[in-house]
Amino acid sequence: MEFFGKTKKDEVATPGQPRVFSNLQENYTDSIGRVVQGGEDSSALVVQMADSVLDSAIKERASDIHIELHGEQMKVRFRVDGLLEDYIHGPSHPNFPLNVRFRILAGFDPTPPNPFRVEDGRFMKNVTGRPVQFRVSSFPTVDGEKLVLRVMDHAAIGLPLEQVGFLPDDLTLMAKLIQSTYGIIFVTGATGSGKTTTLYAMLQRLNRKETNIMTLEDPVEYRLDGMNQAQISARTGFTFEEGLRVILRQDPNVIMVGEIRDASTAEIAMRASLTGHLVLTTLHTINATAVIERLFEVGMPPYLMTSSILGAIAQRLVRKLCVHCAQPTNPPTQEQLQASLPWMTKEEADQVYKILQQPTAQFKQPMGCSNCGGRGYVGRLGIFEVMHFNEALRNHTLNRSSGEVIRNSAIQSGMRTLWMDGAAKVAMGVTTWDEVMRVTKAML
Image (cartoon, rainbow, N blue to C red):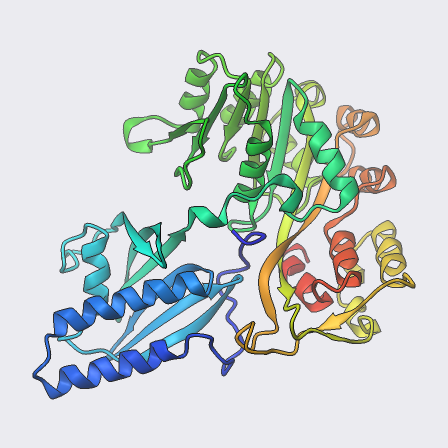
């Protein structure tokens, strides 16, 4: 992952943006025309078109490929830097079944089952000179089958912790937290906000020959050398809860649990962290301090939380400005800031203003060029909220203080919030305030 990935699934790119690989549409139109005219081997053309789609997706750094049928129309969309973009939109043809080619690659029957059943598959293919895995999911719509291919490009996941996007002080704190021999660290954020990349970067930092690292994942997205990775299976009863019980008999030093989904798994993980194990896991909350509220909600006793929690990291992904075409601009307008200020605490708002008013701030705006395909952005960058579970937060937890009190305490102790971290990166000229607002609007 290039500094991570994703935003809300219903967000799409601005229509009419130039495409780096606009010839994908031309190739599709040409192939359909040749099939309609007859005299060509349509199966060979379909294979070539499917290969072109995969090649283009990798070159565009797409995280997902959407193959959609809409009546007599067919559409191929890529999710690039978190936003969906059209790459092919044209007539479908029974003699040019592009979706069938991807079904075959995934190991499905060429014809969708009737009655329809959900199908999940994988395939590996050499793309642009290296093996890339694709995870395939099918879904019924009123217009026909929809396929989504998740791009599992191992070359894009191996970021060291230093390149994930933490500012220097947060990086120092992160490095300190994961050197603990026991305790639990939570990484929180929406699906696709880069949690897996952060977890893997932490594991890579800890991966030494004298350390036994065990993981429970759903699914195992990337294979990591030197680590013992396991995939849960609800069908066989190998759940996160059961897997944790077994792992504790495997003499682990570090345990990574892909997700805390219920109270029993949370309790086992937290108790495991008290017995000489460092536990890394994820939770779905809107910010770092909300982890405490969430654990209260599922019934975790305060004494267990104060004894086990080391910290929590919340994160989102913003698009990075293209270094070739970004141009200087003015600071965010008062109207832009007002859109978010009502939702911040006073401490957050004061800090955001302070950050954006730094005399060294270098604000930039996207312009679009051939290097970025006219988007103005290339790749993504994490914005973070790193909460150190200090003595003040332990006392608030024991007293079951409100979420507002806990959050204000964390900020007063030096925690940089998502908005504050985003403002810092806007002032560095690597992203824009519009991007920060786009990915944090779910918090509003």
